[in-house]
Length: 307
Image (cartoon, rainbow, N blue to C red; front, side, top):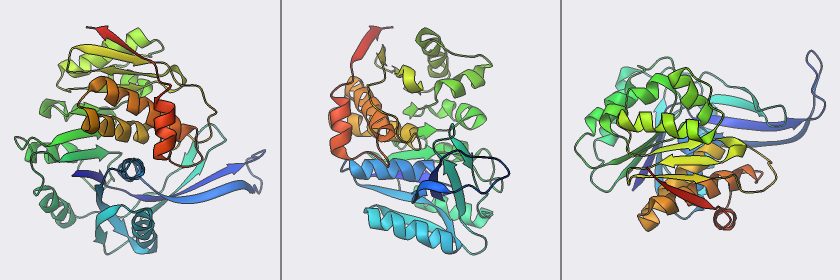
């Protein structure tokens, strides 16, 4: 079973605004409300690909209830932990203004509720897959990913991590199955600006040396790179298509990679599905369907380079 963890789920209010003006009343040209948070996004795309999974995390208030209902309506099994006080956050995303977002805070999560999640994760065993994705609420320790991976050490659970900066660096000693920074995040880790694929490969390898088994790096319109544990570098240009919505494209890549790997045991196929899923979701108003992912993935040209 695949489990995703979203510590701070949200209702994503995704709008487009024509001729946006600061200090003025602006009206939406389009709008939709979806359950959000990186782990939930991964769950949605996995579900679209026909792969059963369970979404874990915390919810609070009426917004949390709507998140829970929305996830269930999509067909995803959820095992959320309810927080008694506060509200799950609402994130405003203005999709046609250079990815402008205003993200809410979310509820305070007590140590007691952290332990409740740990009890759920203690049930994971060989053959299970765990996705740790997204930021950590300020009320929680910033070493929570590290704590979880340490607790699961030795159980042969495949763990995917999509996080930034120290959240990512601190888990490398536990050898995550795959990590997925974008090229901006990868550059920030090492204090450099990465603009070329060969640079991305160099620094992705550096993260592999630090412990990651596979390093998947998204590069937006420049495509993607995978430095894999099988001794190869896989590269692909971005497939052609019209960008409609970049929200969740990176999370779709994580889901596509896991789906491709579980179905084929091939890193090349996992990478192809990853690029296909991320691009297909970017070309769609919402998360891509299975048919859309498979169509775009069929157009992804993967180049395999011997390390």
